[in-house]
Image (cartoon, rainbow, N blue to C red; front, side, top):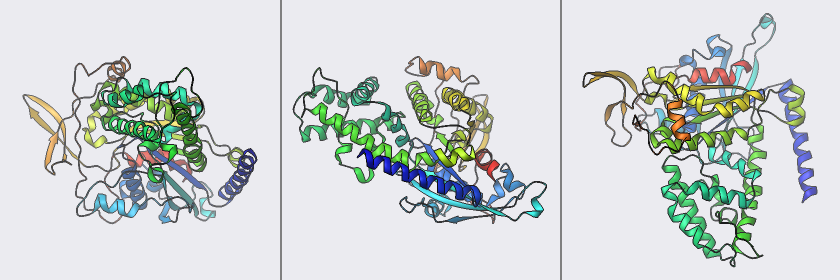
Length: 471
């Protein structure tokens, strides 16, 4: 097994060298990873980004397009035959068709290649012919990325952490009762294992619905083809004084290690390690609405996610010999269209403060990072209403649950993000001086003119940060 791992590693390094030489000398490739936790808007972001890169009238802040350097952009087959294609056409039809609705969310890794014909810039631009630059977009669930932290844990450490995390969450009561009623040192029984695993998965789903972010292992939420497999049939248990061979604890320990080797490591090896640009989409407004505990959980989850990256500047020879490093990371607070534009700077400030620890780590390692608030698909319009002698900056859109048009005022975000982050860190049960609301809006009916992509907020600036220097 060790010999096979070494041989496989050598083959992969040789392939990486060959691919790197081809990219450096002929057609460069930008590999953009798009991730975020549930409901952060990954599918909508990719669909709108591609549509607006192909039809660039709404992209004035994307300098390669504004300066006329991008001659054309077109879709090509994705480079990896064993990775599903991101279903761009169906998602765009869902968002912009006659009956607009939100597309199905990310449930597995997918990929899309968008190729650009780019006119060279600079003093010698007239002597050089246009070149082709490929953009490979890799879409993957943020829940799977959180699993990378498991690689540094053994089963006992993970169990202790998972049980401790479940204790203050009211939806964890049933699972905790099952876990503490089980006998970890007792003889392994498949029926008991399935019950514990099912209860644990139900708790994780409920925690996610309640707005919590750190709900690992991620495949318990999105099992895919592995549903029912032994690698997904385990749960955290209290560590017994002694766990004999054949005990429930020993079998769950074995399955935990199998999950790391069969699920987590292949994901890192085959997908995550290829990325050199990354956007992390964050539903900050949803976490604020869910309360201080959910916001603090989001902060910790984002810190764990960023610890998985290998940020730093790519040197040409280094990228050929030792693989890629993440050069740029954008932290994007999504659903900015749920707020009046006057509050967008405050949302960006909360995003920056929320990511401060992770951002400092990435900056220190040499990566370029930024935070901004965006809406990949704008679903609302803005208006100011009088309410009890007070003027309120509102947004108006079509409510997802009822289909009715309504104006909505979510509350003012504080100018100082510490007014949110400090009570969250201190374990506050609720916000003391403000209730922050959130509504779910459906996509608006739109009519696109030739050359226009879907309406958005700051998608052009996001594209400029992530891609502008390579085009």
